[in-house]
Amino acid sequence: MLVNFTFIGLMAPVFTIFNPDFTVNTDRIPQYANYLLESGINGILVAATTGEGTSLSVQERKNLTESWASAVKTTRQHLMVQVGGAPFPDVVDLARHADNLRVDSILTMPELYFKPKNPQELISYLKFVSAAAPNTPLFYYHNPGHTGVNIDMAEFLEQASNQIPNLKGIKYTSNDLAKGYAALRAAKGKFTVFIGGDYLLEPAFATGFTSATAASINVFPRYSVEMLAAIKQAKLDTALELQQNLTRILNIVTKYGSRVSGLKLAMNLFTPINVGLARPPLQNPNPSKIEEIKTLLEPFI
Ligand SMILES: *[C@@H]1O[C@H](CO)[C@@H](O)[C@H](O)[C@H]1NC(C)=O
Ligand SMILES: *[C@@H]1O[C@H](CO)[C@@H](O)[C@H](O)[C@H]1NC(C)=O
View (cartoon, rainbow, N blue to C red):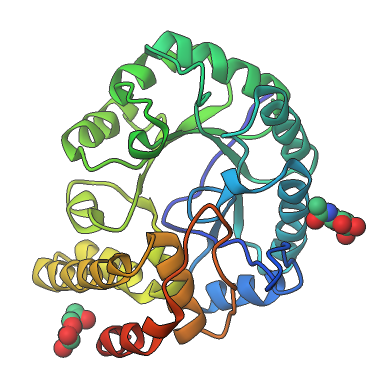
């Protein structure tokens, strides 16, 4: 079975919307999808780090995936679903569920307890995920800061190349851009390497990355959209200034709480989509600081 992957560009790792009682709200998903489309974002990533995927139950993740799959039927956005970070039978179950729904791609974290120690151990794990979703392009989620798994991605791609038929690339979320660049070179047009995160978008685009996922794409989509356009037109000063402003935004947000909860607050303050609070164990910014945060962020809107 030939599995195709053609997406290039910016993908929003969407927030999971919680009601005030911390149950998952799926009602606002169609509106959220439209808002992103109107902001020039044609890719959606569900239940990754920004989407608090590891804070959700299996049934909640299935419900979310079903709601997004239904929303993108109208907006025609690419739908990638993160299925990992759960006990192994649940990962397999989520992969099968996503495959049955015909989502456009799946992304998985590594096993988080019996961690793989080398590329081949990771490949053997991914083969099981691949077998559960054989019709869907598969991506590996490299995020050593959160997972504690730090396998060399260039070596991994070289070794995985002929072993996992539907492997289409990786999401590279690490501040080690030298290793990310090596992975991009190793991908050699056979794999897609998404740069993940908000701090290194400009240097990544400048060194040849063409696809990205970053939490800020939800709240401040114009920064990534304009940065990518500026790099394509060789307007390096503009791209740098956009990155510097984006970094300032992230520094403000993370001073008051976690990156995800701070950006959720910004989303609620500055966009039409109310995504609610972050679910425990994440902590939310102190409500008494909301006006202060708003004032600091306003110049960057
Ligand atoms: C999943 O969705 C179904 C149908 O909409 C609903 O009845 C159920 O409560 C939801 N489950 C969870 C855990 O959110
Ligand atoms: C960066 O932010 C400042 C406000 O602090 C603004 O004057 C400037 O235009 C911004 N630059 C870009 C490229 O958005």
